[in-house]
Length: 374
Image (cartoon, rainbow, N blue to C red; front, side, top):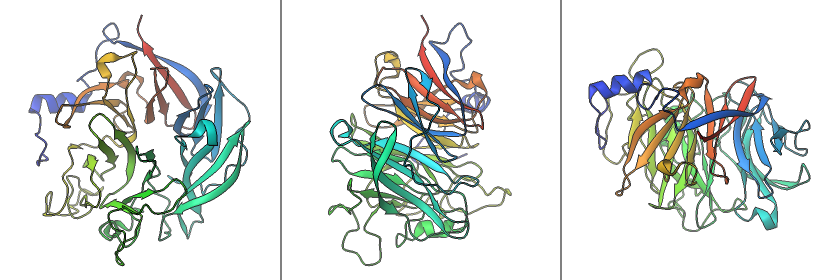
């Protein structure tokens, strides 16, 4: 089993986790009810909440949709740039600017390019009346690649107004994750206009991209800032096992593919190492894999027992994993939620109404709304 700074739970607990039994209370014991808010979305990927009560949802197929008054509007947002759509490639995250109420800026991440040359792109534009205008590219990951997988694409704002973008290794180029001279397998930090912050950890070095914040990642699929502990949390897909929850520290190397607790899809070893000097250990690793997707943090009042917890959507586990953070900033998985649905879960977010919203990953995907059982 994995070892490192986190402590492995007892075998009985591991077996319960693998079966979904931990936290999988009977229907009469659950504190929540799950309703379908809208259905008929093609692989919904990300959800965002606007000050006027509208919700925006991306479809990986390249559309940005509007939910208004609990109804999915028939027309997608116009002006959204065309995404490269194939396999895992498509439209990813939608993220309003922290000053959205006054500047109306929306940020989108998506796969851009062609089968032979594509990359992760971030744009911003002004949103009004169902249209995106004044669209400008603020970041293209380099180099381009010829694989339609492992793009990352999750974004998060930091308190200083800078933007984090998680990226992937392109799958066939995993060794490049150890080369901060490119963007593969890294998290980058940008100003809101795409410029490089002057205090980025590698600014001034000729051998490292100045946008790079951390590197040595496989496929970052969730990023969130925890203001209570001033921690940046990020999770990423391992191969066959070895999914990770990490605390991001500027300039650090997170080890992929030199260290991992996973094995290749064939069962072959990727590396003999789970630890190496100068490489960060995950604070939680999931083996077998849960395929962590979206990452949210709950701060509402509807579920006070979840306050401050991380919520991790699982594609393979078909559950949301609730992670408690103790007073020292150590995470611990305490519960698996919504596994009774039996669906791949792509994103999970706490809404401004204190309810939890979950996206299911399928050609007939849904937005689920989680409320408290009366």
